[in-house]
Image (cartoon, rainbow, N blue to C red; front, side, top):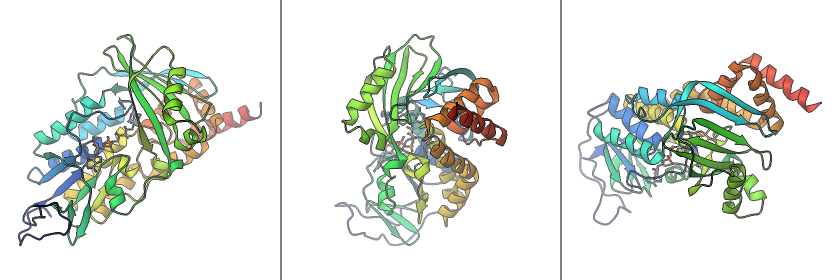
Length: 402
Ligand SMILES: Cc1cc2nc3c(=O)[nH]c(=O)nc-3n(C[C@H](O)[C@H](O)[C@H](O)COP(=O)(O)OP(=O)(O)OC[C@H]3O[C@@H](n4cnc5c(N)ncnc54)[C@H](O)[C@@H]3O)c2cc1C
């Protein structure tokens, strides 16, 4: 239930000097992290409960950069519409054109059923946070370092009291650690570097070039529409470690080799915790969303859609089940993503073999509906229909024995 606790202010040991939690001043929801997951949680809670007291904390001021491919799939735009922001990206050019190069070299160019957008995260995230502020969410710059459960409340850094917390503090989530959940294991973590390069303003083809060496690994070029493209390269962390070389050398070197005509500036790398190693998405009154919950597609590295979706569901649970939000959140998450996540768990294991991906992309080259399945599974909440699974399996076996 929303409403405000009345009672004597309590003092919590460890509170920063001069500050103590005031239980007269209880936030209905405190969101830690103002990326897509956190902004979606705050936006949804404020949408459902305009009189709710919602606080969004981020260690950075916005606009801030975030290492990312900046690719926002149509599924992400559906989430923006649910959050009441259907036109948030309207000034960015949509593109449906995709070219995928399989590890074995097969190249497939196709038009996706629905367009994607490429929007620099400095712009996208700042717009989301601004929309949350406009909806009545209080936004503060604050790095969260400590958390304590006290009865029906969570006390943050000894000075902020919340009925519910959404931890959306990204791949290296401090809150996840503070509630006793370990970081993602290396085998379920990828690392990627991104930069920006000049391209023709008319270039609107999103390129994904997979690489056999150190597989799974791929480079991308995602033109924005303003004469620049987001370019990058990513691979699994254990494969990077196995090279024995400094990470920068490997990531920057392979990006330059795979996209030789697109020298990149503003290079910045970050970890991607993949959903194949996801934890239970919370504890007590704390719900994990987005990268903090390891909700990144293990096949593509896409995480913005899952961040928006999980953040929205966590924001919903915080207001609709305020007495005990976590079970409600877990139910919603399971209903929205359970089958999809189980599908990508299996596919991620199969995709350890580049031959499987070659077969999938080879099948997509011949069957248009297969391309849309790949897009839905790689960028959305899609599943693999049985006839498609059988077609890929047959091709994989055939390729293996010829
Ligand atoms: C190189 C690269 C390329 C990628 N490309 C794509 C792509 O093209 N498309 C796609 O969909 N996904 C992509 N991803 C994944 C995507 O970037 C993430 O899944 C997405 O950013 C997750 O959003 P989030 O809100 O969970 O976390 P983040 O966007 O990381 O936001 C977390 C926020 O928490 C704040 N924070 C952290 N710690 C604290 C703290 N202790 N206290 C307060 N605030 C804190 C941070 O400042 C940050 O603002 C890519 C990832 C990488 C690394």
